[in-house]
Image (cartoon, rainbow, N blue to C red; front, side, top):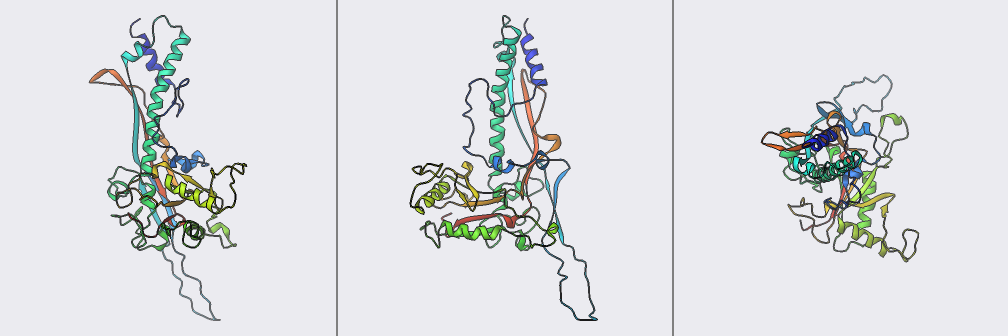
Length: 377
């Protein structure tokens, strides 16, 4: 019966789908790199149709200006109408990512003996397969998360010949002079130095006195809430964005989250939380109904003068996911290959997961950052 078990396992891998982040039996997956995930926030509440798209590129159209045609007039006035170009087209390239798992003839043969019943053999195959997939999917999801929080490099992310996806730091900058990350000129082909409506919002707080009522974190949050909100005028609403802010989220590092929770406790005369007046945790803090969440990838993100944020100087990113889209290609949405035998390693088989994706920004002015007034880096 030599070889039977391997053939059966290869067929099993080829005809069964993958299971995301589910381990066999009681195996605990402690391989994940992050405690919390920005990817989860980006995809939450979105239908598959909003996440999976086709086409050669990811395209969108933005209008930054009105046509300037309004004016008062007197009877018999002569008008001079014009037809300006008002829209700006953006087109970004798909980027390509893969992850895989490997199995060998030997590990399959030695884990499925001739004396096993058909049911026991199937269970053994399933357990091996899920162990392999657990490692692969952990790598894949952590890899995507790391790309979403990667250091912004224009040659890798903005350039057509680059291979990296845009990150949050590609789109949101605390630079109020050039309005883009260091070393960049355009973002999605648009220069924010020339287009005022293609700039994210920036407010600052005094990190030496973060609980100060007029210069601290809460005061900066008060400003930011007003800056990122754009209300419809109340007439002809079909022509305007409906800024419900229902998909907004404020994200911070561990120290940023800790500082915010400390500020909440310092501002109240009793401990509240989870319906228990003795619970000091503030487990689900929010500001104006907008959840404040820790994203563990921000803890050591080396994006501030090539270093992570300094102690006591956290940033708070205000993200509106109605206008930030993580998009996957219809035909390459974590597509799983059949087992491939390596020509130079004939007893080794590889199963690949292939995906085309990128992140697109549709409105920078609806995003913001709360930063220290005079950061160390």
